[in-house]
Amino acid sequence: MNRSFSWGADTLFVFSLNEYQQVSHCPENIQGLMKKDKDELLKKPLTELVDSNALPDKVIKEVNTSLKREVPWRGIVPFNVPERGTVWFDVIVRGIFRRGKVTGSQWLMHQADSEYASAAKNIYRRRTHWFQWLTRPFRNWKNTRRWAKALADADGSTAKTQHEIFGSSSPMGRAMYELALRDSSLLALTARLSEGNDVLAESVNSTAENASKTADATEQTVQDIEQIATSMEQMGQTVDEIARNANDSSSACSDVSKQTQNAADFIADSSKKITKLVSVVSESARQTEELSRNADSVKEVSEKIDAIAEQTNLLALNAAIESARAGEHGRGFSVVADEVRALSQKTQQAVDQIEETVNRMTQSMSTWRNKMFEQRDLAEECGELGRKSEQQVYEVTEAVTGINDRMTQIAVAAEEHTSAVSEVKDSMISINDNVRSANKLTRDTEGEVKAIKTRLREFRSLVEAFEDD
Image (cartoon, rainbow, N blue to C red; front, side, top):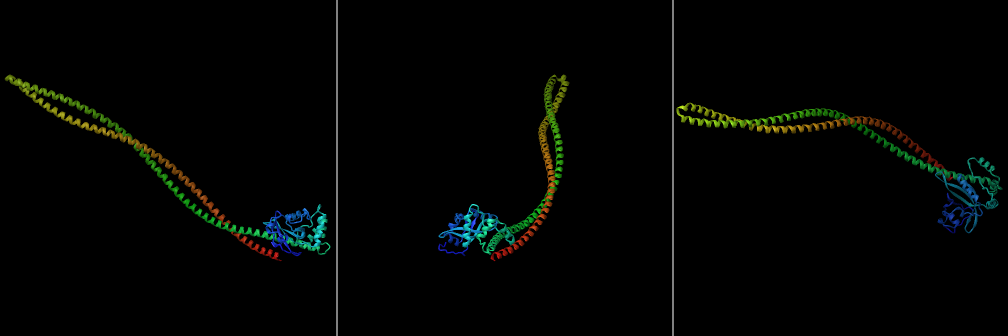
Protein backbone atom coordinates (compact mmCIF):
# COMPACT_ATOMS: atom_id res chain seq x y z
CA MET A 1 0.00 0.00 0.00
CA ASN A 2 1.36 3.38 -1.05
CA ARG A 3 0.61 5.75 1.86
CA SER A 4 1.81 8.74 -0.22
CA PHE A 5 -0.89 8.01 -2.82
CA SER A 6 -2.27 11.17 -4.42
CA TRP A 7 -5.57 11.46 -6.25
CA GLY A 8 -7.80 14.05 -7.80
CA ALA A 9 -11.27 14.67 -9.19
CA ASP A 10 -10.55 12.58 -12.29
CA THR A 11 -9.25 9.54 -10.39
CA LEU A 12 -11.52 6.53 -10.86
CA PHE A 13 -11.82 4.15 -7.94
CA VAL A 14 -13.14 0.60 -8.19
CA PHE A 15 -13.81 -1.93 -5.45
CA SER A 16 -16.14 -4.90 -4.97
CA LEU A 17 -18.42 -6.16 -2.21
CA ASN A 18 -19.62 -9.70 -1.59
CA GLU A 19 -23.22 -10.68 -0.94
CA TYR A 20 -22.80 -9.71 2.73
CA GLN A 21 -21.82 -6.10 1.84
CA GLN A 22 -18.18 -6.78 2.78
CA VAL A 23 -15.13 -5.75 0.75
CA SER A 24 -14.02 -8.64 -1.45
CA HIS A 25 -11.71 -6.80 -3.89
CA CYS A 26 -9.69 -3.62 -3.29
CA PRO A 27 -7.06 -2.38 -5.79
CA GLU A 28 -4.10 -0.25 -4.69
CA ASN A 29 -5.81 3.11 -5.32
CA ILE A 30 -8.60 2.19 -2.88
CA GLN A 31 -5.95 1.10 -0.39
CA GLY A 32 -4.22 4.45 -0.91
CA LEU A 33 -7.52 6.32 -0.60
CA MET A 34 -8.43 4.62 2.69
CA LYS A 35 -4.82 4.50 3.95
CA LYS A 36 -5.19 0.80 4.75
CA ASP A 37 -3.49 -2.39 3.61
CA LYS A 38 -5.36 -4.96 1.58
CA ASP A 39 -5.71 -7.32 4.55
CA GLU A 40 -7.21 -4.50 6.61
CA LEU A 41 -9.80 -3.68 3.95
CA LEU A 42 -10.90 -7.20 3.01
CA LYS A 43 -14.07 -8.30 4.81
CA LYS A 44 -14.62 -4.73 6.07
CA PRO A 45 -18.34 -3.85 5.90
CA LEU A 46 -19.55 -1.01 3.69
CA THR A 47 -20.99 0.80 6.72
CA GLU A 48 -17.43 1.39 8.00
CA LEU A 49 -16.36 3.00 4.71
CA VAL A 50 -19.22 5.45 4.24
CA ASP A 51 -20.23 8.36 6.48
CA SER A 52 -23.33 6.85 8.07
CA ASN A 53 -24.25 10.14 9.73
CA ALA A 54 -24.58 11.89 6.38
CA LEU A 55 -26.06 8.95 4.46
CA PRO A 56 -29.62 7.81 5.23
CA ASP A 57 -30.17 4.04 5.73
CA LYS A 58 -32.74 4.06 2.97
CA VAL A 59 -29.99 4.79 0.45
CA ILE A 60 -28.25 1.49 1.18
CA LYS A 61 -31.62 -0.28 1.10
CA GLU A 62 -32.36 1.18 -2.32
CA VAL A 63 -28.93 0.06 -3.54
CA ASN A 64 -29.65 -3.48 -2.35
CA THR A 65 -33.12 -3.41 -3.89
CA SER A 66 -31.69 -2.36 -7.27
CA LEU A 67 -29.10 -5.17 -7.10
CA LYS A 68 -31.78 -7.73 -6.27
CA ARG A 69 -33.75 -6.48 -9.28
CA GLU A 70 -30.54 -6.91 -11.31
CA VAL A 71 -30.41 -3.27 -12.46
CA PRO A 72 -27.58 -0.74 -11.93
CA TRP A 73 -27.79 2.19 -9.52
CA ARG A 74 -26.24 5.67 -9.56
CA GLY A 75 -26.07 8.26 -6.83
CA ILE A 76 -23.94 10.51 -4.60
CA VAL A 77 -22.45 8.72 -1.56
CA PRO A 78 -20.34 10.24 1.26
CA PHE A 79 -17.20 8.26 2.27
CA ASN A 80 -14.94 8.66 5.31
CA VAL A 81 -11.52 9.38 3.78
CA PRO A 82 -8.56 9.51 6.19
CA GLU A 83 -6.89 12.94 6.42
CA ARG A 84 -9.76 14.49 4.37
CA GLY A 85 -12.89 13.66 6.35
CA THR A 86 -16.18 13.22 4.50
CA VAL A 87 -15.72 13.18 0.72
CA TRP A 88 -18.71 12.94 -1.64
CA PHE A 89 -18.35 10.53 -4.59
CA ASP A 90 -20.39 10.09 -7.74
CA VAL A 91 -21.01 6.30 -7.65
CA ILE A 92 -22.33 3.72 -10.10
CA VAL A 93 -23.10 0.32 -8.53
CA ARG A 94 -23.68 -2.75 -10.69
CA GLY A 95 -24.17 -6.38 -9.81
CA ILE A 96 -21.60 -9.16 -10.02
CA PHE A 97 -23.18 -12.23 -11.52
CA ARG A 98 -22.17 -15.86 -11.17
CA ARG A 99 -24.18 -18.65 -12.76
CA GLY A 100 -26.99 -16.20 -13.44
CA LYS A 101 -27.29 -14.95 -9.86
CA VAL A 102 -26.16 -11.74 -8.15
CA THR A 103 -23.32 -12.67 -5.78
CA GLY A 104 -22.02 -9.18 -5.01
CA SER A 105 -21.59 -5.67 -6.38
CA GLN A 106 -18.94 -3.57 -8.09
CA TRP A 107 -18.58 0.11 -7.11
CA LEU A 108 -17.16 2.54 -9.69
CA MET A 109 -16.73 6.09 -8.37
CA HIS A 110 -14.94 9.38 -8.70
CA GLN A 111 -15.13 12.55 -6.67
CA ALA A 112 -18.48 14.25 -7.29
CA ASP A 113 -18.73 17.74 -8.68
CA SER A 114 -19.15 20.26 -5.90
CA GLU A 115 -22.63 21.27 -7.06
CA TYR A 116 -23.82 17.64 -7.02
CA ALA A 117 -22.22 17.03 -3.65
CA SER A 118 -23.79 20.17 -2.20
CA ALA A 119 -27.20 19.30 -3.60
CA ALA A 120 -27.04 15.73 -2.26
CA LYS A 121 -25.89 16.97 1.16
CA ASN A 122 -28.84 19.33 1.43
CA ILE A 123 -31.34 16.78 0.18
CA TYR A 124 -30.07 14.05 2.55
CA ARG A 125 -30.28 16.48 5.43
CA ARG A 126 -33.83 17.62 4.56
CA ARG A 127 -35.24 14.18 3.74
CA THR A 128 -33.68 11.86 6.25
CA HIS A 129 -37.05 10.88 7.75
CA TRP A 130 -39.21 10.54 4.66
CA PHE A 131 -36.49 9.98 2.05
CA GLN A 132 -37.19 8.18 -1.19
CA TRP A 133 -34.10 7.39 -3.17
CA LEU A 134 -32.72 9.77 -5.74
CA THR A 135 -32.70 7.60 -8.83
CA ARG A 136 -35.07 5.25 -10.53
CA PRO A 137 -33.32 2.07 -11.74
CA PHE A 138 -32.92 1.91 -15.46
CA ARG A 139 -35.10 -0.92 -16.75
CA ASN A 140 -35.28 -0.81 -20.52
CA TRP A 141 -32.19 0.79 -22.00
CA LYS A 142 -33.24 -0.12 -25.52
CA ASN A 143 -36.09 2.40 -25.62
CA THR A 144 -35.09 6.04 -24.95
CA ARG A 145 -38.62 7.36 -25.12
CA ARG A 146 -39.78 4.75 -22.62
CA TRP A 147 -36.99 5.84 -20.25
CA ALA A 148 -37.98 9.48 -20.66
CA LYS A 149 -41.59 8.56 -19.88
CA ALA A 150 -40.42 6.61 -16.80
CA LEU A 151 -38.62 9.71 -15.55
CA ALA A 152 -41.63 11.87 -16.25
CA ASP A 153 -43.98 9.48 -14.45
CA ALA A 154 -41.70 9.18 -11.40
CA ASP A 155 -42.64 10.55 -7.99
CA GLY A 156 -42.44 14.32 -7.96
CA SER A 157 -40.00 14.58 -5.08
CA THR A 158 -37.73 11.93 -6.61
CA ALA A 159 -37.74 13.62 -9.99
CA LYS A 160 -37.11 16.97 -8.33
CA THR A 161 -34.23 15.56 -6.35
CA GLN A 162 -32.70 14.04 -9.47
CA HIS A 163 -32.81 17.43 -11.18
CA GLU A 164 -31.47 19.16 -8.11
CA ILE A 165 -28.48 16.82 -7.77
CA PHE A 166 -27.53 16.20 -11.37
CA GLY A 167 -27.94 19.73 -12.66
CA SER A 168 -31.50 20.30 -13.76
CA SER A 169 -30.44 23.89 -14.47
CA SER A 170 -28.16 22.56 -17.17
CA PRO A 171 -29.83 21.51 -20.42
CA MET A 172 -27.42 18.55 -20.60
CA GLY A 173 -28.08 17.30 -17.06
CA ARG A 174 -30.84 14.84 -17.85
CA ALA A 175 -29.10 13.61 -21.01
CA MET A 176 -25.81 12.99 -19.19
CA TYR A 177 -27.63 11.20 -16.39
CA GLU A 178 -29.53 9.08 -18.88
CA LEU A 179 -26.31 8.24 -20.76
CA ALA A 180 -24.58 7.32 -17.52
CA LEU A 181 -27.41 5.03 -16.54
CA ARG A 182 -27.47 3.50 -19.99
CA ASP A 183 -23.74 2.93 -19.86
CA SER A 184 -23.92 1.27 -16.46
CA SER A 185 -26.92 -0.79 -17.56
CA LEU A 186 -25.09 -1.92 -20.65
CA LEU A 187 -22.04 -2.79 -18.59
CA ALA A 188 -24.19 -4.78 -16.18
CA LEU A 189 -25.97 -6.46 -19.06
CA THR A 190 -22.74 -7.36 -20.84
CA ALA A 191 -21.29 -8.61 -17.57
CA ARG A 192 -24.31 -10.80 -17.05
CA LEU A 193 -24.27 -11.94 -20.67
CA SER A 194 -20.58 -12.71 -20.37
CA GLU A 195 -21.17 -14.60 -17.14
CA GLY A 196 -24.14 -16.40 -18.66
CA ASN A 197 -22.10 -17.15 -21.76
CA ASP A 198 -19.36 -18.66 -19.59
CA VAL A 199 -21.88 -20.74 -17.67
CA LEU A 200 -23.60 -21.80 -20.87
CA ALA A 201 -20.24 -22.59 -22.48
CA GLU A 202 -19.30 -24.66 -19.45
CA SER A 203 -22.65 -26.47 -19.64
CA VAL A 204 -22.25 -26.99 -23.38
CA ASN A 205 -18.73 -28.32 -22.88
CA SER A 206 -20.00 -30.63 -20.16
CA THR A 207 -22.90 -31.67 -22.39
CA ALA A 208 -20.54 -32.29 -25.31
CA GLU A 209 -18.22 -34.30 -23.10
CA ASN A 210 -21.14 -36.26 -21.66
CA ALA A 211 -22.57 -36.79 -25.14
CA SER A 212 -19.20 -38.10 -26.33
CA LYS A 213 -18.89 -40.34 -23.31
CA THR A 214 -22.48 -41.48 -23.75
CA ALA A 215 -21.85 -42.26 -27.41
CA ASP A 216 -18.71 -44.22 -26.52
CA ALA A 217 -20.62 -45.97 -23.75
CA THR A 218 -23.50 -46.83 -26.09
CA GLU A 219 -21.05 -48.17 -28.66
CA GLN A 220 -19.48 -50.31 -25.97
CA THR A 221 -22.99 -51.29 -24.88
CA VAL A 222 -23.80 -52.33 -28.45
CA GLN A 223 -20.68 -54.50 -28.50
CA ASP A 224 -21.54 -55.95 -25.11
CA ILE A 225 -25.11 -56.64 -26.19
CA GLU A 226 -23.89 -58.33 -29.36
CA GLN A 227 -21.53 -60.41 -27.25
CA ILE A 228 -24.39 -61.24 -24.89
CA ALA A 229 -26.61 -62.18 -27.84
CA THR A 230 -23.85 -64.45 -29.19
CA SER A 231 -23.40 -65.98 -25.75
CA MET A 232 -27.16 -66.44 -25.42
CA GLU A 233 -27.24 -68.18 -28.80
CA GLN A 234 -24.38 -70.46 -27.73
CA MET A 235 -26.16 -71.02 -24.44
CA GLY A 236 -29.31 -71.91 -26.34
CA GLN A 237 -27.40 -74.45 -28.42
CA THR A 238 -25.84 -75.87 -25.26
CA VAL A 239 -29.23 -76.09 -23.58
CA ASP A 240 -30.66 -77.81 -26.67
CA GLU A 241 -27.82 -80.32 -26.49
CA ILE A 242 -28.50 -80.79 -22.77
CA ALA A 243 -32.19 -81.36 -23.53
CA ARG A 244 -31.36 -83.94 -26.19
CA ASN A 245 -28.90 -85.68 -23.89
CA ALA A 246 -31.44 -85.58 -21.07
CA ASN A 247 -34.09 -87.15 -23.32
CA ASP A 248 -31.61 -89.80 -24.48
CA SER A 249 -30.59 -90.43 -20.87
CA SER A 250 -34.23 -90.65 -19.87
CA SER A 251 -34.87 -93.23 -22.60
CA ALA A 252 -31.76 -95.16 -21.55
CA CYS A 253 -32.87 -95.01 -17.93
CA SER A 254 -36.26 -96.37 -18.97
CA ASP A 255 -34.56 -99.28 -20.75
CA VAL A 256 -32.27 -99.89 -17.78
CA SER A 257 -35.25 -99.75 -15.48
CA LYS A 258 -37.05 -102.38 -17.55
CA GLN A 259 -33.96 -104.59 -17.70
CA THR A 260 -33.39 -104.17 -13.99
CA GLN A 261 -36.99 -105.08 -13.30
CA ASN A 262 -36.59 -108.19 -15.45
CA ALA A 263 -33.40 -109.03 -13.55
CA ALA A 264 -35.23 -108.49 -10.27
CA ASP A 265 -38.03 -110.82 -11.40
CA PHE A 266 -35.48 -113.42 -12.52
CA ILE A 267 -33.58 -113.15 -9.23
CA ALA A 268 -36.82 -113.42 -7.27
CA ASP A 269 -37.78 -116.56 -9.23
CA SER A 270 -34.27 -117.96 -8.76
CA SER A 271 -34.45 -117.20 -5.07
CA LYS A 272 -37.72 -119.13 -4.83
CA LYS A 273 -36.22 -122.09 -6.70
CA ILE A 274 -33.10 -121.96 -4.53
CA THR A 275 -35.30 -121.97 -1.45
CA LYS A 276 -37.12 -125.00 -2.84
CA LEU A 277 -33.78 -126.62 -3.66
CA VAL A 278 -32.61 -126.03 -0.10
CA SER A 279 -35.75 -127.77 1.10
CA VAL A 280 -35.17 -130.71 -1.27
CA VAL A 281 -31.50 -130.99 -0.35
CA SER A 282 -32.36 -130.86 3.33
CA GLU A 283 -34.91 -133.63 2.84
CA SER A 284 -32.37 -135.68 0.85
CA ALA A 285 -29.81 -135.22 3.60
CA ARG A 286 -32.38 -136.36 6.14
CA GLN A 287 -33.25 -139.42 4.06
CA THR A 288 -29.56 -140.16 3.57
CA GLU A 289 -29.04 -139.99 7.29
CA GLU A 290 -32.02 -142.33 7.74
CA LEU A 291 -30.57 -144.69 5.14
CA SER A 292 -27.26 -144.63 6.99
CA ARG A 293 -29.05 -145.60 10.17
CA ASN A 294 -30.80 -148.45 8.30
CA ALA A 295 -27.43 -149.60 6.98
CA ASP A 296 -26.14 -149.69 10.52
CA SER A 297 -29.15 -151.84 11.42
CA VAL A 298 -28.33 -154.18 8.51
CA LYS A 299 -24.78 -154.37 9.77
CA GLU A 300 -26.03 -155.31 13.21
CA VAL A 301 -28.23 -158.03 11.70
CA SER A 302 -25.26 -159.28 9.65
CA GLU A 303 -23.17 -159.47 12.77
CA LYS A 304 -25.90 -161.50 14.46
CA ILE A 305 -26.10 -163.82 11.43
CA ASP A 306 -22.33 -164.18 11.46
CA ALA A 307 -22.43 -165.09 15.15
CA ILE A 308 -25.19 -167.63 14.46
CA ALA A 309 -23.18 -169.08 11.54
CA GLU A 310 -20.11 -169.31 13.69
CA GLN A 311 -22.12 -171.06 16.42
CA THR A 312 -23.64 -173.37 13.80
CA ASN A 313 -20.19 -174.16 12.49
CA LEU A 314 -19.05 -174.98 16.00
CA LEU A 315 -22.08 -177.21 16.55
CA ALA A 316 -21.45 -178.96 13.21
CA LEU A 317 -17.87 -179.57 14.22
CA ASN A 318 -18.99 -181.07 17.53
CA ALA A 319 -21.55 -183.19 15.66
CA ALA A 320 -18.86 -184.49 13.33
CA ILE A 321 -16.69 -185.44 16.29
CA GLU A 322 -19.57 -187.24 17.91
CA SER A 323 -20.37 -189.00 14.61
CA ALA A 324 -16.81 -190.21 14.33
CA ARG A 325 -17.04 -191.68 17.77
CA ALA A 326 -20.24 -193.42 16.87
CA GLY A 327 -18.61 -195.16 14.04
CA GLU A 328 -20.77 -196.77 11.43
CA HIS A 329 -23.93 -195.60 13.15
CA GLY A 330 -22.93 -191.98 13.08
CA ARG A 331 -21.78 -191.90 9.50
CA GLY A 332 -25.03 -190.36 8.16
CA PHE A 333 -25.12 -187.81 10.90
CA SER A 334 -21.51 -186.96 10.08
CA VAL A 335 -22.43 -186.23 6.50
CA VAL A 336 -25.20 -183.95 7.65
CA ALA A 337 -22.85 -182.27 10.05
CA ASP A 338 -20.38 -181.67 7.25
CA GLU A 339 -23.08 -180.18 5.09
CA VAL A 340 -24.23 -177.96 7.93
CA ARG A 341 -20.67 -176.84 8.57
CA ALA A 342 -20.15 -176.13 4.89
CA LEU A 343 -23.40 -174.16 4.82
CA SER A 344 -22.32 -172.33 7.94
CA GLN A 345 -19.04 -171.41 6.35
CA LYS A 346 -20.82 -170.13 3.23
CA THR A 347 -23.16 -168.17 5.46
CA GLN A 348 -20.19 -166.60 7.21
CA GLN A 349 -18.64 -165.74 3.84
CA ALA A 350 -21.93 -164.21 2.66
CA VAL A 351 -22.27 -162.28 5.91
CA ASP A 352 -18.69 -161.05 5.53
CA GLN A 353 -19.52 -159.88 2.01
CA ILE A 354 -22.71 -158.21 3.29
CA GLU A 355 -20.77 -156.50 6.06
CA GLU A 356 -18.15 -155.36 3.58
CA THR A 357 -20.85 -154.05 1.24
CA VAL A 358 -22.73 -152.40 4.10
CA ASN A 359 -19.49 -150.83 5.32
CA ARG A 360 -18.78 -149.44 1.88
CA MET A 361 -22.37 -148.28 1.53
CA THR A 362 -22.26 -146.70 5.00
CA GLN A 363 -19.04 -144.94 4.14
CA SER A 364 -20.48 -143.74 0.83
CA MET A 365 -23.69 -142.58 2.48
CA SER A 366 -21.68 -140.79 5.14
CA THR A 367 -19.70 -139.00 2.44
CA TRP A 368 -22.90 -138.31 0.50
CA ARG A 369 -24.60 -137.03 3.64
CA ASN A 370 -21.73 -134.63 4.31
CA LYS A 371 -21.87 -133.39 0.73
CA MET A 372 -25.62 -133.03 0.96
CA PHE A 373 -25.17 -130.91 4.08
CA GLU A 374 -22.54 -128.84 2.24
CA GLN A 375 -24.90 -128.45 -0.70
CA ARG A 376 -27.68 -127.46 1.69
CA ASP A 377 -25.44 -124.81 3.26
CA LEU A 378 -24.40 -123.57 -0.19
CA ALA A 379 -28.02 -123.53 -1.29
CA GLU A 380 -28.96 -121.55 1.82
CA GLU A 381 -26.11 -119.11 1.10
CA CYS A 382 -27.30 -118.84 -2.50
CA GLY A 383 -30.80 -118.20 -1.21
CA GLU A 384 -29.52 -115.45 1.09
CA LEU A 385 -27.47 -113.95 -1.75
CA GLY A 386 -30.53 -114.13 -3.95
CA ARG A 387 -32.60 -112.27 -1.39
CA LYS A 388 -29.87 -109.64 -1.00
CA SER A 389 -29.53 -109.38 -4.78
CA GLU A 390 -33.27 -109.01 -5.06
CA GLN A 391 -33.19 -106.18 -2.50
CA GLN A 392 -30.26 -104.49 -4.25
CA VAL A 393 -31.90 -104.85 -7.63
CA TYR A 394 -35.04 -103.32 -6.13
CA GLU A 395 -33.00 -100.42 -4.80
CA VAL A 396 -31.27 -100.03 -8.18
CA THR A 397 -34.67 -100.05 -9.84
CA GLU A 398 -35.88 -97.33 -7.49
CA ALA A 399 -32.71 -95.29 -8.12
CA VAL A 400 -33.00 -95.69 -11.88
CA THR A 401 -36.66 -94.69 -11.67
CA GLY A 402 -35.65 -91.58 -9.67
CA ILE A 403 -32.92 -90.78 -12.20
CA ASN A 404 -35.41 -91.21 -14.99
CA ASP A 405 -37.83 -88.80 -13.30
CA ARG A 406 -35.04 -86.25 -12.75
CA MET A 407 -33.82 -86.57 -16.31
CA THR A 408 -37.39 -86.01 -17.48
CA GLN A 409 -37.58 -82.89 -15.32
CA ILE A 410 -34.19 -81.75 -16.65
CA ALA A 411 -35.40 -82.24 -20.19
CA VAL A 412 -38.57 -80.25 -19.51
CA ALA A 413 -36.60 -77.51 -17.71
CA ALA A 414 -34.05 -77.43 -20.54
CA GLU A 415 -36.83 -76.99 -23.08
CA GLU A 416 -38.34 -74.17 -21.00
CA HIS A 417 -34.87 -72.64 -20.61
CA THR A 418 -34.39 -72.88 -24.36
CA SER A 419 -37.64 -70.97 -24.84
CA ALA A 420 -36.56 -68.36 -22.27
CA VAL A 421 -33.14 -68.01 -23.91
CA SER A 422 -34.85 -67.50 -27.25
CA GLU A 423 -37.03 -64.75 -25.77
CA VAL A 424 -34.01 -63.12 -24.11
CA LYS A 425 -32.15 -63.28 -27.40
CA ASP A 426 -35.03 -61.56 -29.18
CA SER A 427 -35.13 -58.93 -26.40
CA MET A 428 -31.39 -58.36 -26.68
CA ILE A 429 -31.75 -57.88 -30.43
CA SER A 430 -34.51 -55.32 -29.80
CA ILE A 431 -32.39 -53.59 -27.12
CA ASN A 432 -29.45 -53.58 -29.50
CA ASP A 433 -31.55 -51.83 -32.14
CA ASN A 434 -32.74 -49.29 -29.56
CA VAL A 435 -29.19 -48.67 -28.33
CA ARG A 436 -28.01 -48.17 -31.90
CA SER A 437 -30.78 -45.62 -32.38
CA ALA A 438 -29.82 -43.94 -29.10
CA ASN A 439 -26.18 -43.92 -30.19
CA LYS A 440 -27.15 -42.23 -33.46
CA LEU A 441 -29.17 -39.63 -31.55
CA THR A 442 -26.24 -39.08 -29.19
CA ARG A 443 -23.87 -38.56 -32.10
CA ASP A 444 -26.35 -36.15 -33.64
CA THR A 445 -26.60 -34.34 -30.29
CA GLU A 446 -22.82 -34.18 -30.10
CA GLY A 447 -22.75 -32.52 -33.52
CA GLU A 448 -25.45 -30.05 -32.51
CA VAL A 449 -23.57 -29.24 -29.29
CA LYS A 450 -20.43 -28.56 -31.31
CA ALA A 451 -22.43 -26.18 -33.48
CA ILE A 452 -23.73 -24.45 -30.32
CA LYS A 453 -20.16 -24.15 -29.04
CA THR A 454 -19.20 -22.44 -32.27
CA ARG A 455 -22.13 -20.02 -31.90
CA LEU A 456 -21.14 -19.34 -28.29
CA ARG A 457 -17.58 -18.50 -29.31
CA GLU A 458 -18.95 -16.09 -31.89
CA PHE A 459 -21.28 -14.57 -29.29
CA ARG A 460 -18.41 -14.29 -26.82
CA SER A 461 -16.36 -12.45 -29.42
CA LEU A 462 -19.23 -10.00 -29.97
CA VAL A 463 -19.58 -9.36 -26.22
CA GLU A 464 -15.84 -8.84 -25.83
CA ALA A 465 -15.85 -6.48 -28.78
CA PHE A 466 -18.75 -4.55 -27.21
CA GLU A 467 -16.92 -4.34 -23.87
CA ASP A 468 -13.79 -3.08 -25.63
CA ASP A 469 -15.84 -0.36 -27.30
